[in-house]
Amino acid sequence: MLGYNKEARQTKGLLDNTVIGNSDDKIVTIFGGSKCSPDSAEYKDARDLGARLAEAGFTICTGGYLGIMEAASRGAREKGGRVFGIVMNQFKSEPNRYLTDKVATDHFYDRLQNLITRSVGFVAFRGGMGTVTEISLVWNKLTTGVLPRRPLVLVGDCWNRVVESWKENLVVSNGDLAFLDFAENAEEACKIVMQKSTGVRSEPTL
Image 1 (cartoon, rainbow, N blue to C red):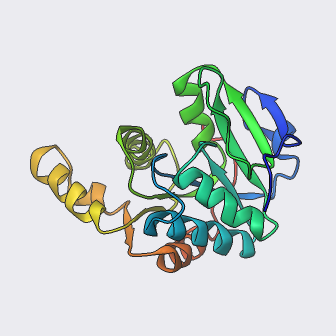
Image 2: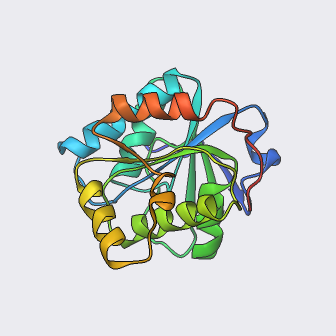
């Protein structure tokens, strides 16, 4: 088993070319809660997704800590993939052991922007308000055209009910919903990302 990766390259600031090194890297950011255990179905699904995406040649980017973030990072590392973790200096907990690169940020907004920067696609598993915030920011950038179109995939049965509630109670149009994709599992999510990220440019999106 991999131990805590003290050799992970550490950077403070932005996820830019000095960190990525190869501008051809295709980065997929995976969002999700930090509280699921390794024996939970969603942890196993996120681990499977990380592995599938790594095998398909994608670099994984997560918030860098436990739960879904660890699961996706673990799956990718086990397949020899590269894993970025966007961590917070204010957090006392250690990043997960499966990162190859850590980008340390001082503020939540900087962390959010780094999670979005250069990603050709996004996948979200069930989580708390942090996950909702991340999805909302990406979705808003897509619907307003600030971010050119790319996949935003929501994995799991919970999201259909959540999004339906948003549509019923908030100002969410069918046009807005067209920017979302839904998947039942890692296999479906991976297929959507591979299909809809084709031709998407990996470039700064701040």
